[in-house]
Image (cartoon, rainbow, N blue to C red; front, side, top):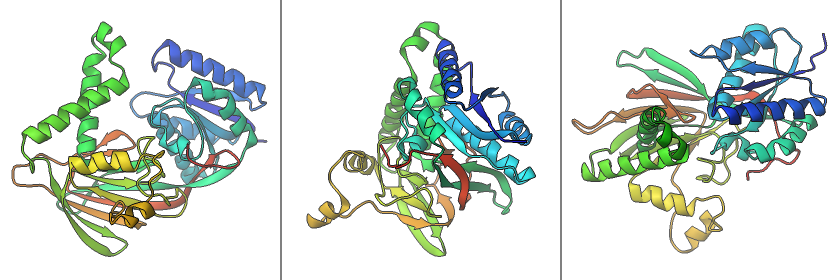
Length: 349
């Protein structure tokens, strides 16, 4: 059987009418490009991954196309990987991003939103493929047992940014119950509100209240980083859609960058100096006697978290979703673990 079908994965209930219109436009555009689309709705209770893998294993699928945000990207990618692991059937992932950050897409020159649909479908029809590394994270308990394992495709993080994300999710659940507020208080505002709230709590709680230390082992090199607000393990060159912490980062080199942040001021300085459109480079900083962003690069990463006495637990996140809180993690780079469809000359935007 010739593999020819394009499976379009999307959540038809996301933002109600907007999602339905985007799905209809995507199906029409894919059909006009001769890509034979078939719609696959995301499923509740974590059933999307296995359901998509089942569909891929019928061996008539040429590609999977995700439409949506980071969560839909992750579910689609995990479905592809599961199908390959179970049956050896492997297909590439194409992108029709609708999210705000879109690190995976922007890192390869793929814009997000309805206005980018036409160009992104042309990219899919072009069929240019590139490998992408995938992260595997394991949370480990005090007895050395793995309590949870998962895959990630953009970044995983520990500390303040994960705490902001957790509060954002709680705020979003509350906002969704209030119709008028729901219309005014969209995702970016919810996140901004959570960020301000957590920053204020951290400052009011004292300079060391939310700080933590971490023993980091990167490919056998052991370091101790003290007084951190955040720790980020990055897979794509972009973080949050706007920042490049390590300029020569690549998504297909078999390595991740481990980036520590030591204070709120450190975050603010990084937000300014590491913005993707900032013309100041690390070489420029060295000329005036300033160092670039501290980081380590490696394939195998082990993290042991230490919080101050009576300090808050150190939360974690993967690809913008809450992950289990632990004090010991292992992160592994799975080299060339996912094929993605990209523009002919992929470059971050």
